[in-house]
Image (cartoon, rainbow over all chains, first blue to last red; front, side, top):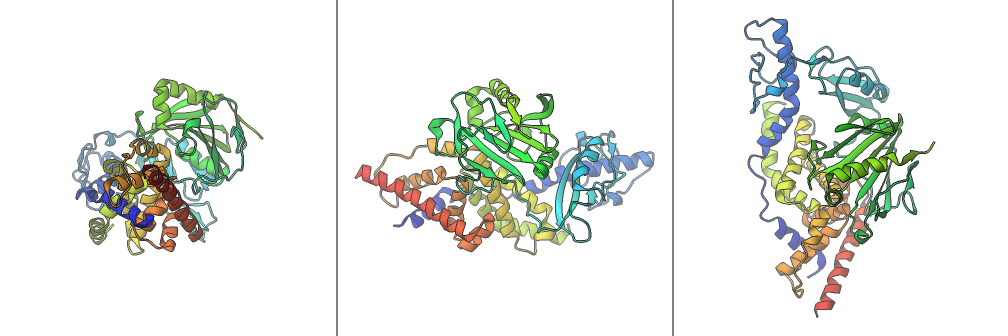
Length: 322
Length: 166
């Protein structure tokens, strides 16, 4: 029996019993609604205020699939869960960002108290980088901290909606031999926890253009692909893109803003667990964003408090070269 | 999203979600439960863009999203370690038997995530080199070399073990 066939047989046996549950569709839709409901409810609340408690208000403006009787705390059609936290009247007016560029949109939205999410579409009528659409619309009220999705014109072929991931194949050596690995991507790490050595790989542009990444691991884990500490340096556009999707607890690194948290694969903040990655992102300069990650195994080994301290200590020891 | 779109999405899920889930399990090496979470969030992306992609090979799109999510998950969490430590039983290698399966899956788990993805798509999903390349957004040459290297590593490891137990 050749290896290909044996492997195929082994893989088939591994997953033979795996079945997608029938409720998959329902759960996928529920996830999606979590994103949508927030805006719908905010719209409903706004209209209610405008009409001062008038009898049924229809939500044609907020593009719900079915008309909705609005009222504070009223159920949203299609929602399978109460929307209590989303139904508060508090919120900010969404600014008009159509016509702005990719570069300055984040600042404007951030100033108004929103996060920004973006997608690119192929569009030759506008210069690349121009914002050509936004949701929710300008002038509507959305809760503070909500995400405003903008559509950015681009001339290049649109990328499919993928999780950014290093463009490496196996363990690439995009940056060549880095020696101790502490100097790369225009930064230098003066401090690393004891007992780690360079993971002998580095990737370029795997986290967007321009970005550099490498890892350090325990010597005994050499060749297994397991890391203890990963560092990513984002420059230029990649630095700004990364900056737009920060979350976590605010910290200061050498006086500059940073955010620390344990993240799930979906990028949501969660408690520390074997399922999450301790991540510290900070902005030493306007055009440089640095991200440090500790593997769950390493965090477990150090203990959460020590890991939080170590990751900030590494960050404090980073110098950015000109 | 029209009602027709919704119905088509349900049909798509009924036909493909199990296969996507299995692929995710193999690529990221996670438990089916964890993989389910990953597939759900990947499918939510598919759902969000459904009206646009449903007529344009949604399966390939969905697989791409799932495989990419599985690769980055495997990388970041290093599920690789869990698999490595679930050490294969030290039984003589005969095929096909559960021992060999464990061994092969163990070896598969030790490969870099992307190399593993190539082997899963090529030998489990039976995709051609070109299809695999399209799914992973890389060249056919990369698929060839990754598949060859991955198989060579597994072969070498098997040979060592066979030699030791003979």
